[in-house]
Length: 199
Image (cartoon, rainbow, N blue to C red):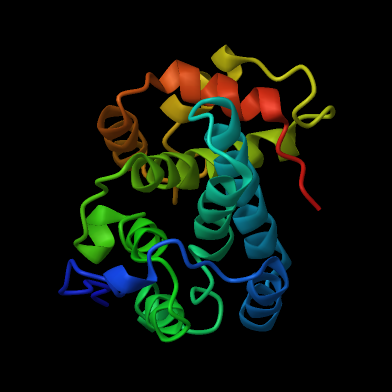
């Protein structure tokens, strides 16, 4: 099954700055995403995106919401339309006149799958948080304390175990860190320190 989008331009430049209202984004999320595990993953990525935008990029609340929204909706079509993954949510956001930067971030969160290269910092961080947060969450479920007391070395040990969270691509994690210009250790520590327990 090919998920290649076969295009690299998304949205309309005239819509720069346009976002969905939080209630609209949450309504779309709740309508499209039924699987609780996928819901949790998307909320975790959205939370990490917000934290990074605020703490590392010093963005204002309006721009933080752009990052959060990209994280919240990046897998919105995976649950019900896996064969249209990325394509369907992109078309929906284009129809709703969303900022092309948000749409591009979603389109580029898996360059090997969708054929779109991450360009902006928002693109690169969404790509970086997506796979890695999933592996770290899987690790947290094995630990009695969850994220509490989790250490970098424990995560790195799991990364080396190919049988652990085998569906998480180690190559993509390394590629994402390289593109973002941030060390794997730093991103792991950032995720752990936020203890992304989002309900």
